[in-house]
Image (cartoon, rainbow, N blue to C red; front, side, top):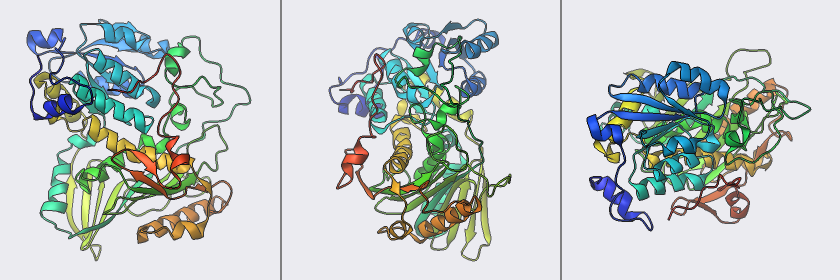
Length: 482
């Protein structure tokens, strides 16, 4: 039986309806010699990258492969010829030789696959964003508690030792004084995904029913089935849930020390401009988060600074990272590095790190071997909260109406950097002959949110709460964990 350390006791004892003891593990390889047998759900680009990391860890065996797309499954099978293969993840999860699973599917499959895996007695490494909607992310947290499983979320920068140095610098040493505000950035150029006049034919070698899973069976008008699902609300979360979750997670970790779970008010908007393609998610996105303490804004754009340019839009700080504005200067953090500058823009200190890759996977395997979820760098709840900021930012966009610059600039409690972000967005759009107050840009009402109930409250609650939980396609339904 699983040993009950303090974290495990909390997981098993506080989850509604759960027993005070964890289920018996069914780990064949782990019980024999400390080896861990992994099964991979999805053999796409990210899945193969993760295989490359896990195969470097001593005692880890890749023994199961699952993908409904044969064009992805077949070449991965050649890479691991001794692995069993499935199109349906339920077959993989029924295999008693598999101890833990790695989930690198489309976003809409993450939570259902994770819950099924934990119900089957498997530990889980699930890619970010944890959830496609906020309600289902909470069900993953509850499942990890109920079944006493290890569940790591793939925000791998959490395992970079540099983060501890930054937190000591900002909070213990208080080298820059009090943190006043924070800005998060994701500026990277992408291309149009095209727009078909007729629905995309599904390739014969794709089991489309399994590929869709919980998502609705709707016609697709983009040019490709794979990867570009990111920009369709039915299956993806846009750039906010793609890169946004990494940079917002860094902000939650280093600026807030995870003490702020979710914001209390959200205001934001954006648009999908320039491309005129089949995508639904914004390629320009701007959001203000009222946390009750340090205000946060995020700016995101996937279009170039101007037509035909290869340059990213102008912005302060790193293209993918965050800025902590402090009394005595600022800290600019990003993947693998950070720097601190004083109020006169003089460099004070530089930090060097890594992406956390391999360390994060080792952290997961160690938690599996020791049956100790408390050592995880990014457990289900940490990943749920960081993903939640992205979910709420997307809801702000989806509840938006016609943009009003006057209203946007008068949001109560918004920091100075919010107005600066709006000015930058206006300059970017103007370079593409678009006005911030054009019909192409929308902005939300001020959305009040209760972090404890994880529901919107107040006068705009009804319009926003309908986005907290998706409609699931039978039989791929996530049931409430009790």
